[in-house]
Length: 207
Image (cartoon, rainbow, N blue to C red; front, top):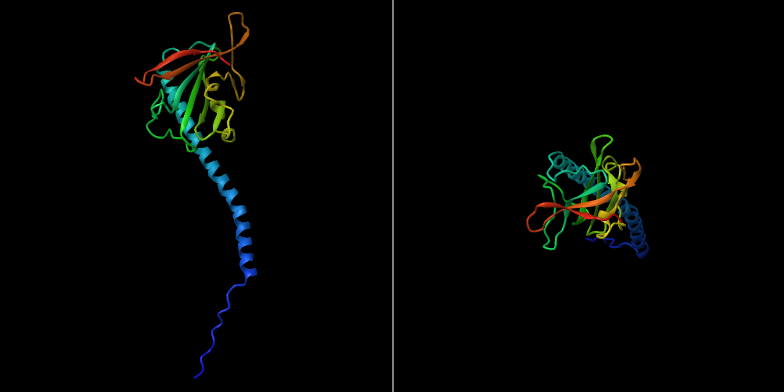
């Protein structure tokens, strides 16, 4: 009885190279798309966290937890996240859940508050930079939801200038003095004392 020969012919080198080229092209198309999707998803998560920070600060301001912030010549920077020298989070507020940064550990994050005597209300802003190189320049609260693309890496924000910003996305923040002339605001920083957790105000000159 004769046995049939089994054809053991495999792929040729040309065929293997063709498969590798096709896979390479598919990866070249897929990887940027997936990376973009992940980045956009992280930005949406971060925007949600920022909204939570602003909401909590709004409640604290209304309850006068930081004292009176009614001087229209001041832009008050309230620390809401950041890493201290001991590696622990430094914040003037406490969120029930969330507060993490999907891009990396917070370096500094602030909600800025300005009293508007014309409307007898407060305007809120947000700015941050983190240890991953991402950051956002001072941005009005009502523009946060549409400001995902303003979260940049690298950022122009630094430890030295983050609380000296007096111009937001919508323009310079100003107030009217006793002569009814518009003047630029100066900044005051509300930081928690690292050893007690109590937030106090210290004056800083706008830069």
